[in-house]
Length: 194
Image (cartoon, rainbow, N blue to C red; front, top):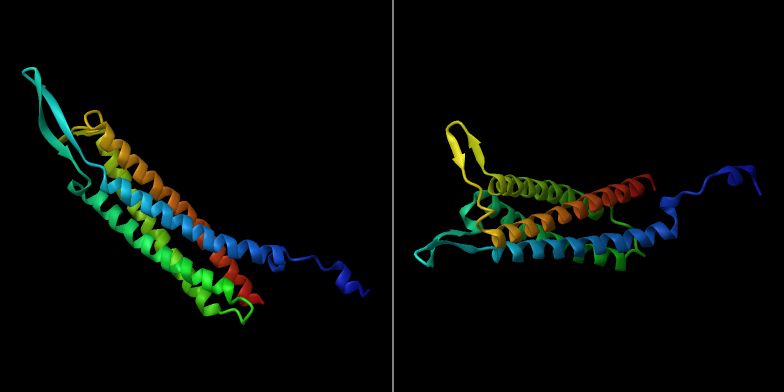
């Protein structure tokens, strides 16, 4: 055996295990993102609550908490919808790419997936940040000179719980999108150096 082949280290990223892991992770994480985005949308759409106050041995509705009253929550809902559609479409594309991987790998398709993953990751974290800011105001309120926003969460616990679940689902989507971006970049780098 020549000395050159004995001293060469095996490359993990070129092994069959890595290729199988990459295929499963690409499709699986995209399906998870679709599920998290759908959960986030469903919990946001059902997060409305009327706030009642006691009045003369009865209760009267004095306010209604609804996601559409906040531009930050509305923006997050739209981001989750866009993310859900793109992750569903990209999961179909990734699945088709795994089924036809015996042919020449298409660097253009992997670059397209990386580009979509980066854009969706940035869009997702912007929606999470907007909703988190609104959520903190709803939880703690704001007391500054000239500004006084009362916290709504002590009065609308169900609403705040649903919004919290929706935001947590969006952060889970973001985590999966970060992993997908890393995997897509690794795959594209391997195709470029192959």
